[in-house]
Length: 181
Image 1 (cartoon, rainbow, N blue to C red):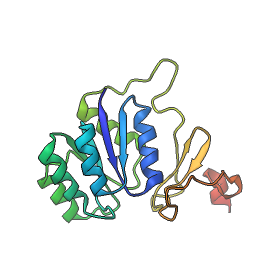
Image 2 (image 1 turned 180 degrees about the vertical axis):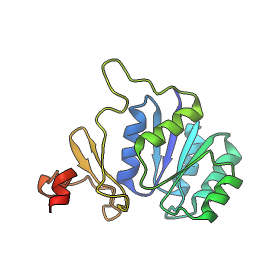
Image 3 (image 1 turned 90 degrees about the horizontal axis):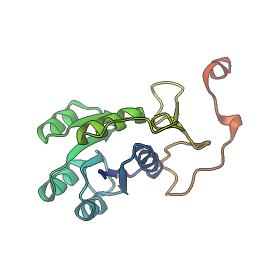
């Protein structure tokens, strides 16, 4: 089975990425800081590392250098900082794909599956990544709401690993209702 390492300090986002990639039939491990990612990469030997540019203890490129020194794998950079400097440095380091936050989870799955040669085929009776629905009011939101197994979750840096609160349908706006208010 193909292995993916997701490295992101936003725990809710990392959990969403893990669940979505696992729905593609991949084995996924998660780290929330650079030091943990380097140690975990040594143990699990990932085929692809999905790496946030900014981590609490180091820059994502430092993690890339350390992992690459011990393991030949593909890298997908995810970042909310789409600067020319980040893009150029990623290209110099041989990063396979760069995704700018917010991005559709299907784009990440497509990039990862293409890199490791795994076809994205719907399982019998299921749609690919069934249960995930992107809800974004506009392109300026920091990260889209995601619907997974009937639970709304929003990547939020203020939550320190706690579970998301129960859904509050009065606060959810979508489609025409959002424009009417």
